[in-house]
Image 1 (tube, rainbow, N blue to C red):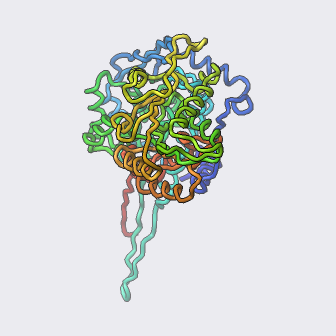
Image 2: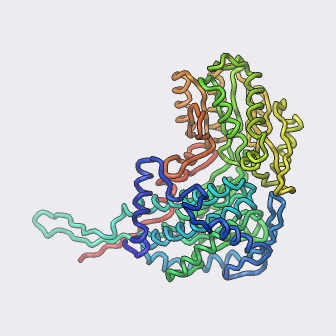
Length: 555
């Protein structure tokens, strides 16, 4: 299984394998955009590389090009003007299949070695990618750098490590000998080939164009399959940069670059035809329930790995650090304007209030104090700009307006429109907090994507746990939180998390937040409730992307 690039990057792979086994803190790529990590000239060079894309065609030299895509728009209100090649999906599938045999022949070691080289190359482009992620998705700069660059690369490396581990369990050959008593033993020479299932399509989302796509991209590629990247039509540049880099590394190593391509179907029918193509055997998707379910129902020829919408909840029972809890929640609800699939939407509070280190707090007081904490946290313009980013889609803006008008419940904290000096046309809104009773579930019991959270009043903590278990089982969730000083209550929450199959965070008051997950240590999603049928990353995420084909003969 040896290959020069595998040998070159073997220490990196071994460290990643150790990390997924121990689940300790480790990151292969620095999340700090400092010169010590990336060099003195990296920030300026990355910005220049990003700006060089603007107002120009993005050439990829792919087969089957029929037109150009130029519909990308920035939530910051800045013109981008990049034109991307639109290729016939059938031509991309055909080219991908033609490239697959050489990729298969390279073996697991060669494929993993090249994937590791790609990730190192992408890491060196982190500033360029960060600007692309920021200006297309609306993320703030630091999130765009971290989540769009090194954190996404870590998730990609994590998938490669799992792929290597699963493939390395399969021996290349064995000598099989069965005793036959007085007769000569039966002897067989057996060989085993790890064979990719076929073309994989990775469908990007508008909010996390690299973090949510690198796991599927690298899991599919490392296990022997071609990949067609289909980004969101308004958030193309991060995917285009990624594809161009991958194609370059493939070509440098004697591989057909058409193993990985960018696809921007001109209409829904063309896209659906790609997803249902008989030679497409895996699809990775992050996005809405409706389309995710369509993929699962109609693309039966493919294994669909889907992360869909859910209703993430927090139960507030009691706390010994009231200020720390409010500060943690204020950041959680503000980060990237709630445009994260892990952001808490439903905060469930007993009608009788909660006990704290600062004395008892009524339900109404908790609501007011949380609203004040959010307002205080975002009171400085530089903090607000860094944390909130900009609103990515018109649909999210419309939901914010609906909530602000009181259509979803009593408005405890109204959203504000903020102005950024650097980006005067940016679409910026602060969070909306809505108070309602548990029986008023029309709005809070379905995902309201964006900076909209509900403070739901329930009879008591037991009722709160019952409610969030029902919500998670029925609608799904990626995260669950509990604040309590009662070990009995915490144990009940743990039991709920097991039954509803959702990750649980307990009493977060410091610098870890319920809507963040760390590669190699945290499993993003369990695959066990309606919010996702897969996890970033575990063995199941990679093992079904390849098959083992054996041959045997007598020696």
